[in-house]
Length: 170
Image (cartoon, rainbow, N blue to C red; front, side):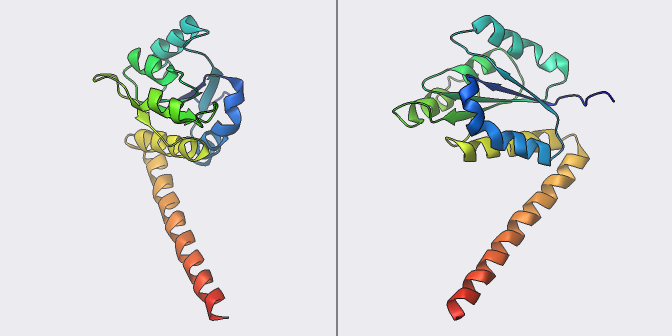
């Protein structure tokens, strides 16, 4: 059976970033979105990084999610080399607790946008959801899955509220 065409490229600056990026993989899988995942460094393997960025669109990729820690400029380098949406996930990998990664990801010059998520696993989850929303613009199946996902979120809040009220009554 042939593998499905990956629609999202996930790049990480280091294999140590995988633990933080796991929610990305989980949510893309939940929405049935095929992805490919690679380690590439803007500083240690710049040619490899530029190749991923410049060739992604021609391979059918619709969005690129980039996780990097410290003051790495991985997401910005990728964004400079493609017209695809780039979603950055700052990773807590330094004594600055990810703030350096946040600044290097979010503070881009005009013309080189990077949609920057929160530091850490919550940002990794939201990166996948944003990528799904981008793909859903031209994919009704994923759009329908996102609608159901939002309903699930609302239902969970209602159940938690009811459980809280019941616990307080006792």
